[in-house]
Image (cartoon, rainbow, N blue to C red; front, side, top):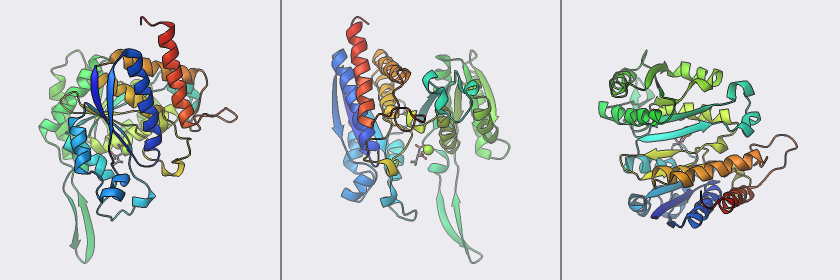
Length: 365
Ligand code: IPM
Ligand code: MG
């Protein structure tokens, strides 16, 4: 198979972790005889410095013609003036909207080897395996916003807007996913207060009618936030709108002990997708070879699965990550007191070594 992959490292630790993800993809392609063509482009603060915009036309154009996009992270103190007109996040938000990537998949599984790395009790975490489907191109992020002067003082507003069609298409993604899993969809909203949430609930309930084999439950977002730490094993597929999904996925990330472990995929109607570790640019640790590359590597696995249809190759990478963790390999964010620590490059190399060894031991797989 031949594919073009747009590589957008971005800012902070983005370039370091993406380099490891690309190396793992190259290794996998070599082992399986695929031809992956990587093309790099600037986004975020790096693009602002060079072109004065977080999303240069050439970057968006590359994303449009690529089969998949591998993204690092954007943002950092250099561009952090909240009142600035040009901000790094515009790169990310512009690609999501520009490519209509409305479904953001954020899987949260706690590998047995990492149960001790979380601040939560092992008995709460053992066996957690959930996925959040976050609506990504609507709601507060893209609604009308502004400032007014009212009664002699400054007033600000952001609006949450959802159409039936926007809710419907992302709901289908969640139900289809649930069919390949434990067949439970928890739709999360704030229907006791918000009109958008009442529409959300109505549409999701209607879509559920087409999936009689999947159980649908509704949960209020505040209660879901609580249940996520009280009984996370309960969840299979969590379906929610943009802002709630942003918040709940940071919370869910902590179940694994480190936000450095969580990959994500952002998908539209076709196979082209956008793959990104959810941890962000972490400027304070950038450039020191200490960031955890596993979220980026696991994002690369999702890329193979969702955009290129290479399920076996994806599963091999996931298994290799599991195996290096089982062997006790840890980056700084995961290491307990006294445990030896690997750098970003060393962790990437360990995954590649594992991947290669498994293939060589059983090439027929
Ligand atoms: C995320 C991030 C982004 C978001 C930021 C960087 C705009 O927090 O992907 O979760 O809020 O969507
Ligand atoms: Mg977030």
